[in-house]
Length: 308
Image (cartoon, rainbow, N blue to C red):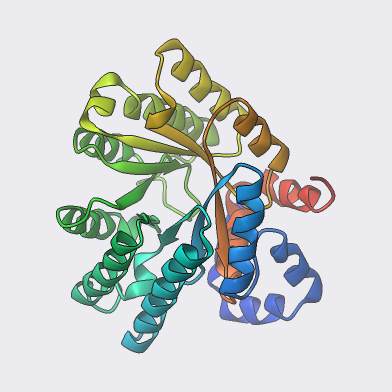
């Protein structure tokens, strides 16, 4: 019930207007959002890099409904890639296709993505396409595959709460794809997604192991293990050690502002750790989904305000 409540709020305009004007909410979100500006985000990248952590930057935004907005978002990513190169920070970029016009016209989205990928290629960078709700899974993978035939600096995301994800991961492993695996943070019906957290967790472990097999690695598959759940991390570490998976085949990914001690512990254990850093004025849906991922996250996020 609490999950559904926050997911409804994430799409409610009245709630967005109310909460974004609330000083406490803005201060709480700031713990998990690098700031409103690109300059602030680059400074956060510098700080994280200095601690031995990699970064992926997200210019927050989604569900753009007009072509002008999609062009503006594209320009923001071009500016981000230029700023990363100029500053010399270690950061890739993550983005949502609905921010680039997928809801308007798939061709528009593809054109905008090509501009971004060309700039990323020219600056030696990498782009990851975030996965949105299950309504967009087919379109997202279609765009990903279309562009991957043209560019080699592109990855995507799979969510372990969807029933279809095993088939998707098997296909992507055979293709030697770059995939970030997460649990999923959208409201989905039981016809599409596991309703029980235990099943989502079990599938996360299963998909992690599937993507780290010798066959997947031989094909060139690379996995971003995106979780703060220590049980999932321990399960991944056990498989990695038992099967002698080289560190060049995977990395751990976590959100900015959450479990920094755990991030540093993984770094100290010799793993690559990448921090997902969002920035920009459109932080509201991103923040609300962090609360909605599971009811325990409400206390989890609030408690992180008072601990490192």
